[in-house]
Length: 418
DNA sequence: CACCGTCAAGTCGCA
DNA sequence: TGCGACTTGACGGTG
Image (cartoon, rainbow, N blue to C red; front, side, top):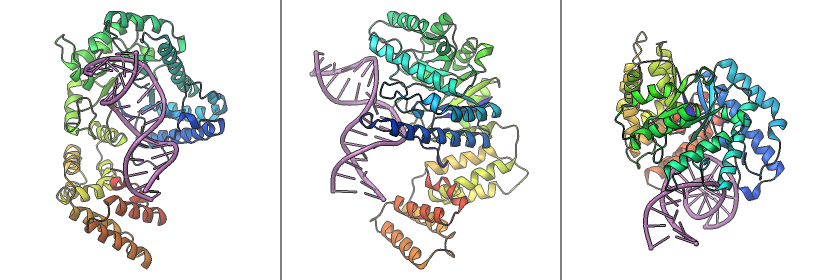
């Protein structure tokens, strides 16, 4: 069982993906962007290895305009060494990667032009994974597409166009149920017909369920049959609804108790779970810790070192409770720990608590800061107190201090990222 | 340096 | 027939 996250990281330095608008594209610009993005990808992979995250979705934005005529540089040649180096790290660590073209890659469109571009886009995604030299268990996930007033015909177009794809693309392509057009029953029928694997997405299934009354575990077990040995373990997508936003919006963080409930219902380990959630790697680490058989409180202490100032800012009560919870070093109170973190994160941040946390962090610099820095910081605090500055101004100021004085503990803190 | 409109994509609902 | 909403993070121009 591997648990992973998609595309971006929170709180990991030098992992940002750059892009540009299409009118500004030129060769020099593209080389610069791609070089930056491959470095970022390598840093993400390094982070994943270090944190025992074995599943990761590579962003389609890795190569800007990767499937567009706007980008005609042979990036796979120019950067072949870099790709191979990253690919080695992926394989040596046993990580599994994937890619997922967006909602605008539509293979079953009635427009030949749209289909052509979808095929080009799938080729691009294949080229990225091939350049990494990773095997066919590293997949490209696609939705079926639109309906166009005739679902049966639309499905036939998908099947025909799939058959026209290059073999290297077919080897990696898997299909997923979506939130409005093709439910899991539809996608399973297509997957069985084409003999390709099907990804079950729990939130899409909840929003757009099949008329056939089947619980999600039964659907997951049905999907398992479509995964052949060369495809690797079955993969599913797991996400939770953000109750403050419209139907289908992903939650900020995975709720540990909901996830564990789902995980226990699965009742098996031969399955990989891709989390789709705003806080990305944070939820991945959380779910990995919640399901770990290696129960060492050190894992929670490491987590606490990153969360603590954010928790202090959100809820001083939960802060104290967590400190007490972690006192017994022979225990592994993982569910209680994350429950308290989640409680804290749901709290509204008050001005008093925000200042308290900021001053607490300021304590790290009390002895080393110059008089000028002290004056400047206290002035910002006053401005914030009087409603003349945003909290971000305080945080930016503290962040700059952390960078300047190389306070590694603070540089890793989610206080600055969440 | 903070802020916010724009971008890039295809589909679908609505006038 | 054509236009706006939908979605997302980053760009890029403005103040």
